Image 1: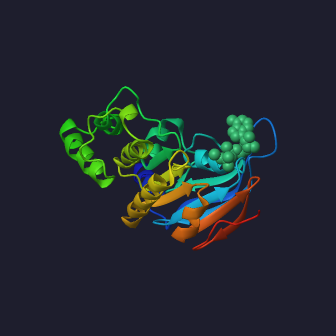
Image 2: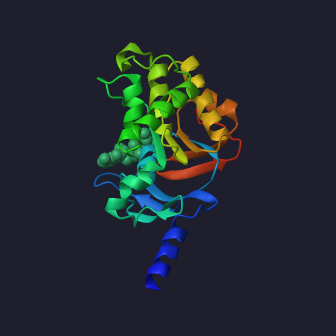
Image 3: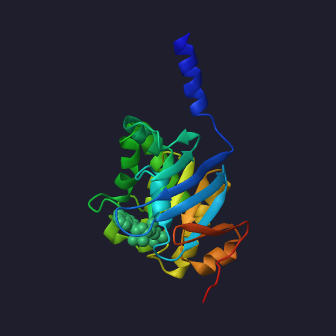
Length: 247
Ligand code: ADP
Ligand code: MG
């Protein structure tokens, strides 16, 4: 009986709530300085596309790190995909993170491995059989427009191509949420647009996408939900919003 109850609870814990991300009264202080986040309340629905904008130092990366459980909040509650991230046991963190794809400004590829290996690696660590990997990697590389570049090393690719590899790696395990922390920060306008369009396509296929960016032009053109942060606080949250001009 106890077992059955426990199993049911476990199942409930992993059910799919409508709000895939819920932060309630979240604050985060590092050992020095003002709080990086100060009373954040934020709900993101399954399948949404959200931009997070704000000056450097406003707490955007801290927010991403809380969602990944790289950091714990000083206070407040962080729910991701129905899981209480604060209470998550250490041994359950790897499985929890499998459901999150992440890309960064600086790509973070393995420099001595080729494109195929960089993407395949994400599947090897979760023990996908090699014959599956051989099917999955070409499929995801063609989704990001990189078919035919399997053997290139990162240094042989443009910034835009490297970010596509990073995106393929983030997506290959089919995460329900894709987090991107300034993914176009190192790219020229053309490549920035191409990456953002890819993120939009990925979102249209069902993945929840949260993008931290400084790219004013793209944010204003794409008409998505825009959450604006300032000094650790959300100062605006608008459907089909734009970049708030303070200059
Ligand atoms: P953003 O990504 O919006 O630029 P961050 O979340 O990186 O902002 O930083 C928010 C605030 O927290 C900044 O004042 C920053 O200096 C501080 N901060 C970030 N990481 C640390 C850390 N590891 N130790 C101390 N302070 C930090
Ligand atoms: Mg940052």
